[in-house]
Structure formats: structure tokens, C-alpha cells
Amino acid sequence: MHNCENCKLRKKYDNAPGSMLGRIWKWHTGWCPGWKSYLKSMPTERRLSVQNRYNPASAR
Image 1 (cartoon, rainbow, N blue to C red):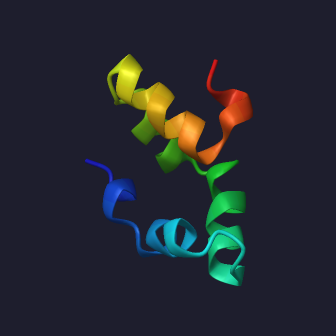
Image 2 (cartoon, rainbow, N blue to C red):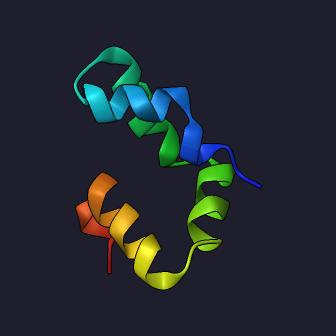
């Protein structure tokens, strides 16, 4: 089970993407094995929705 859905840093990003903590969370998702595993565990439609929300260039 992944805690990514309830991550406090993710919520900071959602509320203020340009904040320091929001930017740290965004950077973190680029290399975090937990985030990558979290995305892989989702059904395709949901995964694409999440990817499009947080990184539109990778939602292919």
C-alpha cells in the first residue's frame, strides 16, 4: 500500500505548486521508486489522469 494518496507534501503541491515544499514534492516524484510503484498500481485510466495532472508531458 502506498501513502502517496495522502502525502502531506503532495497536498502542499496541490494547494501551492510554486511553494518550496510543493516544488520539492514535484522534484521528488521524478526519482521516487514509491511514486513510480504507486502509479503502476493504478488502473490505466486513473494513472493517466494522475500523470496528466502532475506531469502532462509524461501522460502518454
